[in-house]
Image (cartoon, rainbow, N blue to C red; front, side):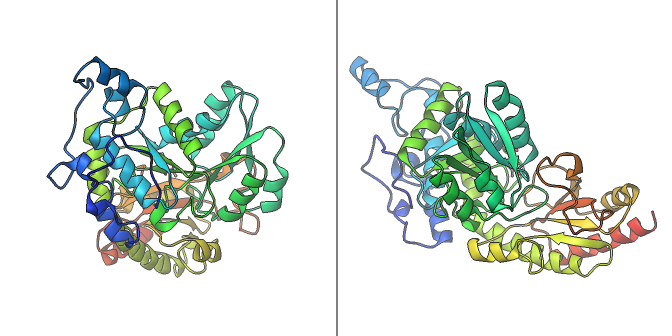
Length: 417
Ligand SMILES: *Cc1c(COP(=O)(O)O)cnc(C)c1O
């Protein structure tokens, strides 16, 4: 549990927020619910505010120099609804000093990288990163004089060798987007620290419930709150939590200079989603494991990519480092054609075709990273070359037996395509 940033109003903290020694579900219920934010009601009210008013000129001057959550100043520094969410996320991320909110997960990634890098620096990016993260590295960051270098997510020696004096930050993601490689994050973060660079982890898949990133040695833990924290596919947001005060302040200053703010209505939706996150993740994990077992036994499936599933790549590291899972998994068809993959996806009834994941409803999306990767080949070495058409499933809260029956009938449609 972090110390958290200093607040202007320190007295009056709710007993409910003093729950650092409690277990996850209890902490999720109490997180961010100090009286300063909520008043006498259960949830913080939605403070829609651009202008904050001061008692007098002396109060305005005092506020200006006190740039911390809890200090009313102007809408761009937030108000109690946003402060409550930011504090809640700090409280559920062990060892976090503070958390900055962003209007999307992608905004969190680009702004966190811009906070720690400057022209002339080299950024190491894991080859299995979320595609927009790759685009940030090779696009806007490169235009501003930062050189991206992509590395094999699983090759620790090559990673250590990739550093030079100009390497100042490393972007990790585990499990990797779509392909689900589990990285040895504690080792990669320790190497990064030894080399004097900052490690940032895109921890959207696991969240701190499944992988306490800062406790495992990362400097900055990033989440797309759009996924598990929202849980309802109706709001977008991102966050970056830092272990050290120094890095938290840099994140905050960069975000403020970039004019970054999230709406209080969206923050309230995120707080609502946060309360049920543990039960949703537990249910999704259970269903995903059942579906992974079922997929692994199917002849149409060459590989199941679900780190929680024994027999999937990365399962040992997952067991060593993770404390929970979620409903996002992938699998690779055995030697089928693109037309067959399309027939399978179109035949699904309970899985919406759509991006994003972590919502209450199940989703499906095809993938084939052959042309995206630059440091590692797809399909990976040792696989049949025809086994490369991937399908990603986000398992929602439907009954898993219904989902399995839907997948079974879609395989039937695929075979007759
Ligand atoms: C969705 C996603 C993001 C980006 O989040 P948005 O809120 O959609 O911008 C970042 N990383 C991962 C791993 C994601 O799945």
